[in-house]
Image (cartoon, rainbow over all chains, first blue to last red; front, side, top):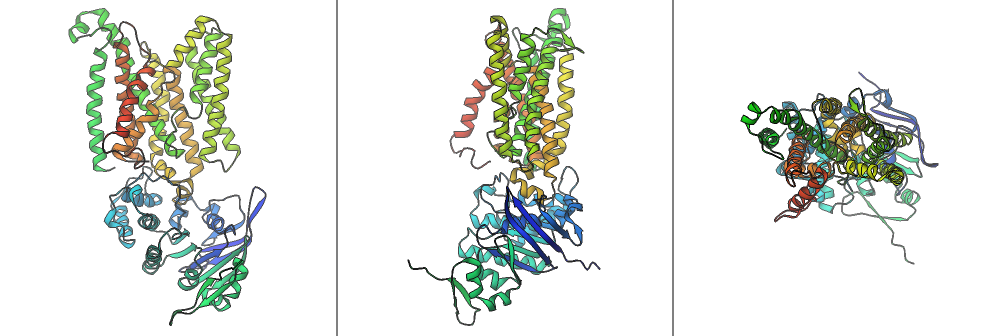
Length: 265
Length: 332
């Protein structure tokens, strides 16, 4: 039995063009965790996610996947270990939904990437769990934002990775589709035991629907722990993170939600 | 590969066989089967002029279309084409230098002009590749811009050469720049196909990477594609293909830009299908254009580059804007 945490960061720092984006981040993520990463714009959330994905190899410090340094893991092995859903804007997607989701099977295919029966089966499952099977034959360019985001999720699910990294998966969606995405994520987590790591701007989503929260301020770890702990210290702690006071509101028996206070000039 | 893709490839093969089978009979004068059998002169023209020329046109057109497709996916840019990285200006400069310094004759059976053009082509790509390699985070756009800069540098050098050259040399250079598939015998054909073949095999093996690269390098990386290696392999392979074509045929425009778009509209962007479809379509397209260029003002010939754009332009505009179509938006 492997006792190593799924992901372990040790003293991770990253600088870009003389500007430090991440400083000295140490973090462990265990199997089955759901972690939300929050912080101001420019705090380094997306960069942190890319470092974990191994996309920024010039970062200093260590990233280990199940105890192995990420640089020693082959690209396909790494892809079978974790999948990534980046931000969507400005991407070329000249594929049908089915073709796109099939791309997630690449780490398991031979050198010409010919789809095997098993791949087709897993693609169908991925389409079903994300409610996208109905438009599998449609072109990606004809989809609405909510549909497109679910297809992106399906493309990551078909990778059958143990970890999902998501970069603001619901930011540009309406409330209903935000909720749909979250439910799909929770379904994936429940069904496959997938570890979920999400960058989000939605503080209440992070506190209410994730087990743990990682708070970044100016590239450094400000808080990492159970969502309830952060919730208990809110709204005061949120002001220190976001530079704006928050009020707590209680609706019936739901847990409190936090709303930024309106600033009067 | 989708079933529709297989069907289209099958149809393309039928069309290719018909076109390649008839094209050598057509020319300044029609050659019939009985001519070939009974007329020694006609059979010589058929065997040593027309057949190798048709085969060369097919491989040149196919290679250009394939490389255009690779660059459009790799740089995620619908305007990318085989000559985007300055490969044609490099080749033109190399060829012009040979013309001006009067380097006649051959090296190992290959004309020096061809050698010069190939060297120039490879130099320009190597320059762009090395410059982008200096920067670890060089994106496709940086590379495109570097290619345009290198292209301008070679174009200016070419202009300088032309300025210094005599009238007849200058005309020779301009004629080279128009492109043309003037091949005699099988020696040049062999040198074209052997070099191009190596590149094409590499591209075929790399086709799955293109599906990932077109969605973005970050996604390709997390899907398990070795992005740095993929780009390097594709760059070397395409420069081999385009370099060998441009060295023999000059810079034939249009095919490499438009054929991949046309085929993408037909079969989608899954590159395992799009690759062969583009190659055959480009090959057939150039054979047709070359045949027209041989007969339209016979006994003279029109440079094939003129025909590809004159004929392909309106055709592609019709495809793009024809009734019920929505431009490129839905396909790229």
